[in-house]
Amino acid sequence: MKQIKRNASLIAASAVLLGLTLPVTASADTVTAAAEPLTWTKCQGPGLDPRQQCATVDVPMDYSDPDSRTIQIAISRIPSEKPSDRRGALLLIPGGPGGDSLADPSGKGQKLPQRVRDAYDLIGFAPRGMAPSTAVDCELDPADLSMTKRLPWPGPDGSVTENMATARRTAEACVRNGGELLRHISTANEARDLDRVRAALGEEKISAWGVSYGTYVGAVYSQLFPHRTDRVVLDSNNNPDPTRVTRNWLAAFEVGVEDNFPEFAKWAARADNPDRLARTAADVRPLFLRLADRLDRKPLPWPGANPPQLDGNALRQTMLTSLYDPDDYPALAKTIRAALKGTVPPAPEAPPESVLQNVAAVGVGTICNDVDWPDSAAHYQKGVDESRAEYPLTAGMPRGPMVCAAWPFQPKEPAVRVTGRGPSNILLVQNERDVATPLSGALKLRRALGDRAVMVTVNSTGHDAYLANGNACGDRTVSRFLATGERPDRDTYCA
Image: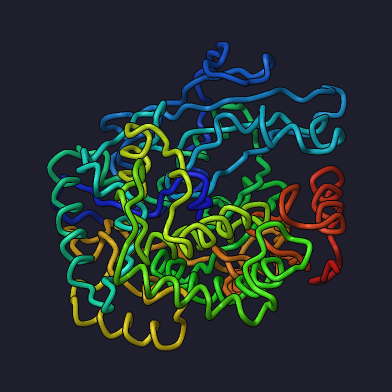
């Protein structure tokens, strides 16, 4: 999922149209007609490479009725830096749901080795619903934009009563304010949009680098349009189980935290650490649990935060966010040290409310339209109780009810089942310790893809592997594949 840390996306609610439609069975043949030439202009925004250009692509809002209303998908590119070596275009597929990659050709795309930048035009985009593409907004109450609301952290006693109330409130706001487009936001439709982008770029085939939730988008694209794929890198991989989709990704946090917290504990017990929390790594976990329990009972005022208090769930959310990247361990340690003294650190700066509203709405549309969620509070309460007993660090949140527990609509089509049918041109790269997309879930995507894929497991900690929190061996392996097509013969391990 994009880095909940980066744009806090996983939640909210959506909809408008009520009605049953037949499943859409898209194939590449539906979008191979000649596209209108793109009009490229200078991109707007701070910090962009002056070479980056922007354009828009028109796509059907409803792929079951391609002649109906169209919406726009905003795209960006930096052309190949050596046209004589150009192979094609490389889609930078963002995480989320609720992320975009419009700035990525100027950002992480410039971290790619020169031979990769020579081989490809780097292509970013804003998925359907994300501004500046045709955008959606649920107009949620600002209090419901907090991460401790959007993720289903239960009450101090483990109750999901307030979670269910938040789900109903969010769903009602999205149905009331979200517009027709919200009912047509889904992973499958994002994949179909990407094939329209491919066609508009004039590419017979397209390569991709998908990260986090983008690995699921990339896998679904590779399933729907296998003969339109060139070289595909899936980085920090989601379990593709079509019966659960985001429910599995949420549940994975309980395992991901257990995989990663020991690394934080070792760091937090180092004698040379100015933010040291305990004399031994074994002491850090009970210290954290005691503090969270204390803050459950007696929160500290936290001016500027949403909500304006540091309670147990705010501490747990800070922990979850900080485990995405070891560089963020000090933020968690400083919060713990301050709270132990009865004070608080400065509240983290939040994105503008308009951005949070847009991210939340796209998150709702995707997670609720991809797969049906149970609507029984008792179902979630049972799961939360079990999770709290087995995984106390996450306090039951990963099995709680998100907005889709109150979503009044059924998905318009079944989630795409990822299989091994298609060309063998996919490379998975996966950190061994990843809080958001744990190795256990990545292995399920690897099995689903069968002979289509090879997986590189990296002995590293954090979310995002390639050119981020991985290691030199993993980076070399991915770069070589993108530049030359050379993959390891079999699944391999990068120590």
